[in-house]
Each structure stands twice: as C-alpha cells, then as structure tokens.
Amino acid sequence: MLRLLDITKRVCFAALPLLLAIAAPAAPRPQDAPAQDQQQNPQDQQQDQGAGYQNFSPEQLENLLSPIALYPDPLLAQIFVAATFPDQVEEAARYVRANGQNGIDGQDWDVSVRAVAHYPTVIEMMADKIDWTTSIGQAYVNQSTDVANAVQHLRHLAKNAGNLVSTPQQEVIEHDQYIAINPYQPQFLYVPVYDPAIIYFHRPYWGPGITFGFGYPIGGWLNLGFRWGWGGGWGGVYYTGWRPYGWGAGCWNCGWIGRSRGRIDFGHSVYINNRYERINVNRTVINRTVNVNNINRYNAVHRNVSYNNIQHNNERASRVNTGRAGNFAANNGRPGNSPGGNNRPGVNNKIIDRNIDRNNPHIDQNRGRDNNVRNDRPPSTQARQQNVPENRAQQRSTNQDRPQPQQRTRAATQPAPHSFGRNEGNFDARQSSQRGQSSRQQAARPAARPAPQSHSQSHSAPQSHGGGGGGRKKS
Image 1: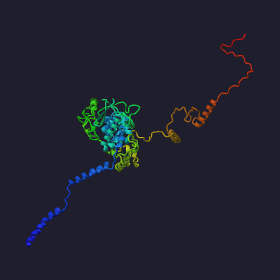
Image 2 (image 1 turned 180 degrees about the vertical axis):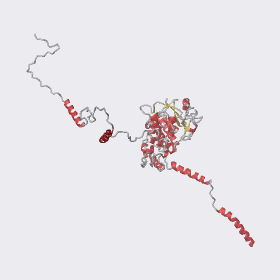
Image 3 (image 1 turned 90 degrees about the vertical axis):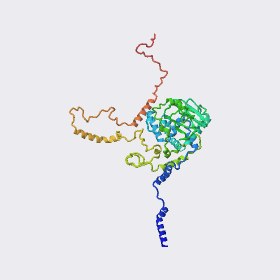
Image 4 (image 1 turned 180 degrees about the horizontal axis):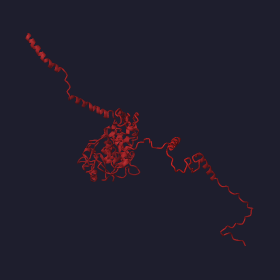
C-alpha cells in the first residue's frame, strides 16, 4: 500500500509541469504583432482620408458638370484628373499668362495639368473658378462612376434638344446608349462654347446652340480617353498610348486617334510613356475647403439644388487639417503657416489656405516681386524742409574744413536769380483761381456800343484814303 502511494505521488509530480503548461496562456508570437497593426492601419487611414465625407447628389453633379460635359473626350478626361490638383492648376495658369506655351512640357506638374495648359482658355477658366475646379476634383476622386454617368445624361439631354450634332469641328458618336465626342479635324481641337441654361433644354432661336473659336493643336499630351460602356478605372478614363485601336479591338470611339496619329512625334513626346498606364489622382483634394457661395451659382440644370454637403465637408476638412499645418519651411521663426519674419505670430488665413498649398515646394515659382517698402526713395517734401537747416549747418561746417579754391569770381552769399520774381514761392492757388475767374467774367462782357447819331445831322463828305482810288470828284 505504501509502495502504491509512492508511485502515485511520483506520477503526479512528473505530470505537474505539463499541466501548468497547458493551463498557462500562450505567449504572443512575434509575427502576430504586425498582423494586428495591419488590421488597425487601414481603419486609421480610412478615417483620415474620408470619414464623414458626403458625396454629391446626381443633381448636384449635373449642375457642376454642365459647363464641360460637351467638351471633347480627350480634353474632358484630362480636365477630370487635373481638377484633383487645384494648386498646380493655378500655378500653370500663372505660367501660361507669363510665358504662353513655351516650356510647358518641361514643368514638374502632373501630366494632366500640363496637358490642359496647352489650351489657355481652359486652364484659365479652371484657375479663375478654383472652387468649382476643386469640387470637380473632389467628386472625381470619390465618385468617378457617378461623374461619368452625369456626363452621359447631360449629353443625352443636349442631343434630344437637337443641340448636340456632328460638325466640322467635332464628331458625335452614339453606341449602345453611350455618346462620345471626339475631335474631327486631325490637327486641331476646338473647345465648344455654349450656355448650360439653354443647351440641355431647347434650341436657341438665334442660331446654333454650340459655337467654336479657333482650333488648338492636337499633341501627344492628349493621351487619355474614355472607355464608355466598359467602365473600369477612374470613370472609364484610361491611357490610350496613342494606339490606333485605343482600349481594344472593339473600340468604337477611337477613330480620332487614327486621324491624328500621323501628327504626333512618338520618338520625342514626353507624354507617351507606359508609366502613364496608371492614372495618377490627388486624393488629398477632399481635405481642401471650398467657398460654397461660389458653388451655389451652378444651378443651370436643376434650379432648386443646395450644396449643404459642401459646408459639411468643409467642417470635416478643417478637423482633418487641424494640427497638420506645421511651421512653414524657412519661416524665420514665425509659428504657424504664414511665411514672414520679425518673429511675429503667424496668422492662419482661411482664404489663402483654401487656394494655396503652403507646403508646396514650388510655391515661389512664377511669383511676382514682393511689395516691400523701398528704402531708396527720397523723403517727403515736409521731411526735406525740416532737415534743410541741419543739413546746411553740417555742410557749412564741412566746407570750412575744406581748402577754399583760389579762383572764385562769385560770392557764396549772392542770391540765385529768380525767373518769376522773389515772390515765386508764395504762390496761392486760391487767389490765382479767383483772379482768373474775374478776368474771364470781364472778358465775357459785351463791349459798350456807341450812341446812335441823330438823323438831323448832316453827313460829312467821305474822306479820301491814301493810295489812290478815292471817290469821284464832283463837277
């Protein structure tokens, strides 16, 4: 019996470590920690980028897109992508105003911004209406498919009204309920001009609803198109690479590429590169605030539409940007995001921050000269008069120390000649005006007429004038 108890005790003590190991919780493995981070990071990233963002309604999108929905597809695709870079759009517009088309291809803007910059009226319109451009970019980043659908709906409205037809400037193609608009001329692209309040509803009584100005060149920068009906990507926008078949053998809206392909220098074009296969958009555009008062005016298609979502998105963007705007590089010790000096506290200007990215390293390019106070200007007349006695005293003391020249025929105290007398400095403008007015009134008075002579007086004989030809002598 004692031997049995001893054997049982030994077995229990031997199994004790195994039981403790089973009961103890498993220690975390090193490879588990990254997996947990990967689950949390996407949530944090999504919260930073789009938490609380309110999309545009279909009616809002149609109002915003109505001014450009009838643009040619190659240009419209570039506008959508470029709208996500509003800061670069403004910079490109300033550059084009200063330099024209020279050097656009060498700028470090996004390829879409460089493409639109080749059309001055378009880049100027986007920069002038920067709040509208930003809204288009925000909608394209979050709702690219909705944007494409709104464009198609507007084109059908214009076509049903009889205003969207093929012309010598553009080609209108309809396939499977999708409408494509392409350049018709192989060398030139024409930007349409129309009134959004009329073009989608009825034909104007004065003539065509769409007019065109002069044509802009077609170049390698038009490297994007729409894959209408197939979708994919950013609302169907894709990189054509100037391939004659476009997005595939069934490309029904790629005829313009074949017509213009012979005008493109494929060997030297910086816009034809396989790296552009991936469309680059600026997702941070949703963190930019927009002046809703500048957007409320876009109601040409749907009149009773408000943009309350923009105000909500502005508040969200302000929360996201709080604390993100750090000290500006080389701000001379000023906190905040306003460049300057003198160690004054920075001021956060919402209007400036809405239109300018202060963290952009190219913010100072194409900037005009600063409006600083010049120190090389002469002082005012009053200051000069106050400083005259002191300057003259200093000058006399300086001249006394200098050796006097031997030949001097004129005394230093001789007064300078006066052209209009010694009282030329005592000019009184009021008295002079009164004297001139009195003189003009006196000159305007009619001269006194001589008194008429009485008819009873006898007329004297005419006097003879020298030089001959006098009156005839009486016999």
